[in-house]
Length: 557
Image (tube, rainbow, N blue to C red):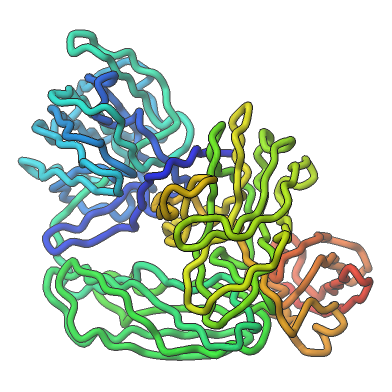
């Protein structure tokens, strides 16, 4: 399991983006193993006056790369506090290798120098991209690449810049030295900074859906419609007009809506808000936002899922596991998700995913509710994490339910205290698209929570409210037709049970009466995978904590 220490200033990993002149590809896209690093790229610190790195980039990560590379760059999580710069030399080489083979010996033999010149490290705590124009284009002919860089500082800063990275195994070797006279010794690394390759943009018609903003869970107890937003990007090399963007919602609730963007400049993005959607039926919706086919159909549609619940709000997706560990290491702080309720409401608890980090048991966590200034206004009792809690959601009740004002920003999340050893309690689920609703703050507020822009995945953080629908048993859910199984027949052996509440045990039987799958879950949505089972009929029995059961026949195909 990858462990990542949070800092208060981190960065966004973007998808492949398209500027007016150049098409810029972040490698890899999507970043399936996101991380950060201050030691694998020029960081501007005096203790790293000379830095070298050499890395392997697999052909699969370059599948969409243009044959003509005209720029090279990095994606930074945060910059330096004061001006820092130096000379950067970058090398590229085609390779037929399937993995990193250069070892820890620095060598640029057989490589092409694609850039030599000044490199000014961005100043400031915000995320930043740096793209350097190559003096002549590099002709990429396909396959894997070896890349190397050498940086010699001229002006240094007191802190270190941090870069967005891809975490893997045996990706390259890096080294640094405090002296310009001493060549650094290289050491193997499993981190590679995100590399940005730019190519001439030939698209005259390319509109991209960058992201959808919709809660992963939305409660019917609010009794009000929700509005979904989406970020739209013009990847064309010309201004586009009258761009039609469509929203389609299917599942237990259905809805369609369209919006028109009158004009969008080349390389510009805008956020659109769709019409209000009423969601009165509990269960799972599939939300899709799309545009018409164009010259690049790989970015025309984004689809996400949403669970309509009784009294639970969450930014994170309604399904999947939250096991990767995120936290402050040996430090302390709060990791939270921002929300605003459309009506006056009362928040009674927070539901937190505990990671499978083995250093977490024995440490103390608590759930917190913060106001817009970052001050704790509600807190649960402290809980000592046990091994049995790892990989599960824990519902922590606030000692006093908190009345919330409508349309006012609040934050709810997990408070982590100082540990004798590093520990990472927040359960995270990987995603290729950077989440846009997580924050970090100090245990004692000195400033408003800081926006977390790095892609550390979705965090399992869910707010629970008082409601009139309450928590009901499976029998009542069945009577209200809120439990659904779809698709049925399965698609590629997979189906979903939605609309559950509380703890449920799911058992799948074949027609011989043999159990082929058993699981217990507190999630509202449970995924069933029968892809390894023969085609045919199966029975799915769902039993809740009150021993009420329902059996449904499904067809595996």
